[in-house]
Image 1 (cartoon, rainbow over the protein chains, first blue to last red):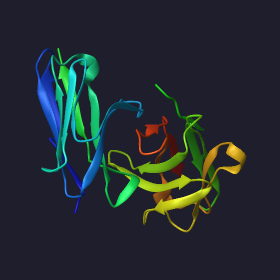
Image 2 (image 1 turned 135 degrees about the horizontal axis):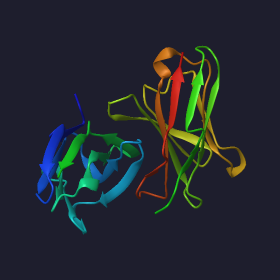
Image 3 (image 1 turned 90 degrees about the horizontal axis):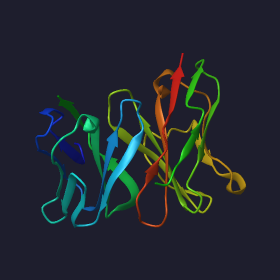
Image 4 (image 1 turned 180 degrees about the vertical axis):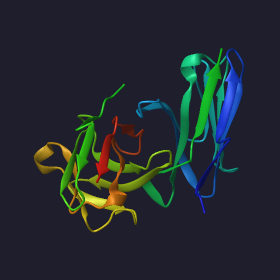
Length: 110
Length: 112
């Protein structure tokens, strides 16, 4: 089965609202990365996490290795936040291999 | 942030031909990776490379695939011969030791 389960698969938000994306891991994840893939396909790094939380502007991410999940919170969504968000985890058994979730396609509407 | 470059951005070739995808990683990075993304699907790990050697590869890294980085130049993925199912976007990434992997913009490969 999938090592990284990401939810929801798609999400539509009104501008200015908040939301949360989630990844559950069936592997012993040691680090997590979050990416935004734009419509052209380029991957933008959002966060690199060891267990704990990080914040950057309107984005906040948390990684709980004991409960095997990570979240990405988007506050005050803007049109330019639209795209596909991916989480990816490294496992204790395979450093330097990223296991990706299937992505959340986010559409922010005016 | 750090930039990984990939050449070419697009490649169309006939089945059975050889193709080489080129990656210019971040200059002080030591680990290099290739990932494959079929349209609309998730990213899948192919291979990682450190100190001139393949460290780990997935079952997607078929015998027809090879990687090298001769003399610190481009990190390359060669597919010989190509098959229809090799059509995908191939992403190169690089990192320093146990740190963020930075991804290139991808090479869109279409095998006809």
